[in-house]
Image (cartoon, rainbow, N blue to C red; front, side, top):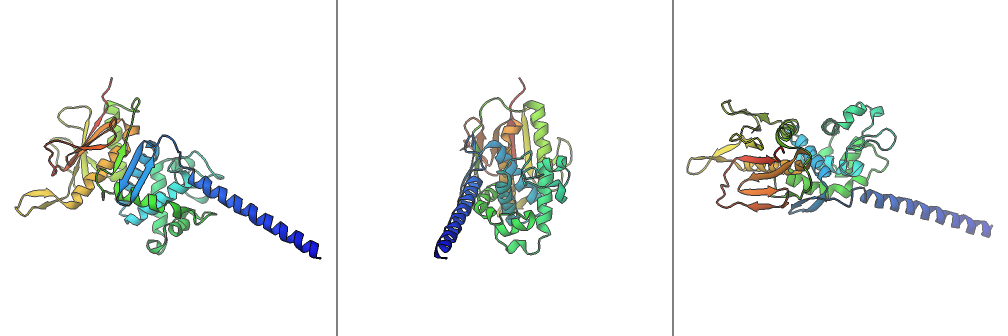
Length: 316
């Protein structure tokens, strides 16, 4: 009997060890899901620093923009980013566990949409926010608990480890930090000229809801507008902000919220620079270039400028 007890105890210890190893490997695997090479972009705020590659940066910017456009609290953006971090490494995956697809690894068999719809990152993001909004009390939950209510994962604690990174991204992408998103990009641009400007304009409209504006037209109402009619230059796009207030002297100036909105657009443009061929972004007296990678203060800058300027690579 004593021998049997010893053997049984040994078996239990072995099983515990195996389970521990499996869980440990999974945790390590989860942490290594983000590619360790090609991290061209850095996001820096008072809360910390995050490094991403260009694809991940663009997806993060779209997730943040759509959340803001839908009027979701900033906490929702943190939850959405943490979920996409864990599920896909902020990548639009073609497949996954069983029939899971895309940024959030949503499953057609569970009613998230068709495979084609879920592969559309904007559709997938909107569906995630819609599902989160239906969760009663999600605002008071931990990030991982709110995400789990939507995702119903077999590993409900897995999302929490991305909460800090997601908070940094949210602060930067929603304009609470200036010059916070930088990307150093080389090689041939993915797009040039008119095609690049057209894609940028569509992206701004789909993500932020900003309207197109041409010289001579009435300025659109709403959160902002963009124009590709900039001094006759076929490589320039400007994004304007509709948020002003009176200075103590009585002159019209951009409000604090308007300045934040400008940085949202500026950071979005840098985040989408790689897929859209953006080579330069200028806002609030500062300039980012794809070649240099960081933001520099311009001489004789006008800090009250309400427009964000983006320049794409010219046609060759």
